[in-house]
Image 1 (cartoon, rainbow, N blue to C red):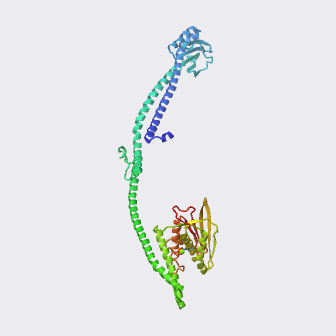
Image 2 (image 1 turned 180 degrees about the vertical axis):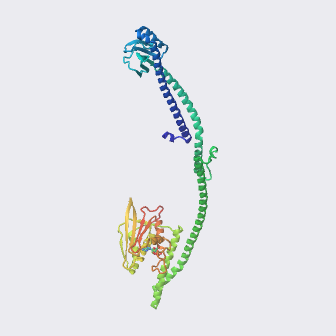
Length: 505
Ligand SMILES: Nc1ncnc2c1ncn2[C@@H]1O[C@H](COP(=O)(O)OP(=O)(O)OP(=O)(O)O)[C@@H](O)[C@H]1O
Ligand SMILES: [Mg+2]
């Protein structure tokens, strides 16, 4: 059956039809032959019985008067029939009385001793033993033996006929099969061909043809299959057209959005730049005032105002810098300068910068940063910015008495390449699941109501995420409302290609 699977559908159908046809021809011829042999054997037996009765009748007197020579002469009548090879006549008591044997027997002839009636097949011969009656009185027994010649002739003839019928049948079967298989294979081949054309040319407007002879047979499964296949193609074609249209619209919308985003980034970059110049002047001059570089200010109030101007200016500058960085990163214009950074030193620097705010908020910061770590290849300033953003969030969103813990873990991945993981865990207000989803959006402050008590613009996390991703790293935040937040930052072991090293520390 596996051989069939490798053949084309045409050949398979032809072979199947021929196999069925020739099997039925074979079975019919075989049954006719077997039945014929059976009938022929019955005829031979009847004929032998009839011959025995007729010849026996003629020998009634010879048996009665003991004329065995005459009886033998009478038995010689069997010589006219070549198929009868032996005949034995017994007296009523079973004593051999007369014997006829064909010359082909030679010495092998033996009349059986047992005279009970039988019909026997042995040694390609049929033999019968039967009693002979005259007016219902048993007077003798007759044994006749015949060859299988007639049956063998018949079988030979039948074999020739069977061969002729078989060959003729096979030819007719083949012609019929070739014609019949077309009605099934043609529509299927059409379908297969259409499917192939579509997959080659990616053209869904091609349709499968229903061949002429079955076109009008609406109940024919193959017509139904072809029509359904064509309908499916029409549907795919229509959807493709629709998808192309939608894709074109989306492309257009994307272009518009991208150009709007570019315009926004450009605008932000310009405006930030324009704002930074005067702001630097504000910060610089307020710092001169604060430090009373050109003599005492007099009233203490001036000092306080100068300090306020300075810190507000610095705060505003921070915001503007974040906006500028984020818009640059979004526009793909932010570049990194890779250094070999001493992580413990960099983190200590961040802890120093944040310590004043932590003290103010009565938040305890602890750290677990091993002193002897391999260098981490990152942009030094951006790395400090990332850690500061995360630490300042932790301190900002942790109420009085809470704790913030920063830890660094390393894992040697391959020879001399190390993966760094920085975790910042706080015991602060935490975030809900929905809050977490918004935390990475620009200006996406969780609980951004008017009476929000935490200052900030919601730019820290999106910028941090962008910066980490630029380093091919990852940021994961796990948080639970009221229970605190765990931020995990991972930096990959292999520095990104094309890095510009800056060795100074
Ligand atoms: N450690 C934290 N605990 C609880 N909430 C947090 C924490 N970190 C971030 N969030 C939530 O995510 C929001 C977004 O954080 P993000 O750092 O971007 O903004 P921000 O700190 O409010 O402002 P900015 O960082 O620009 O000063 C925060 O407003 C806060 O609601
Ligand atoms: Mg922040």
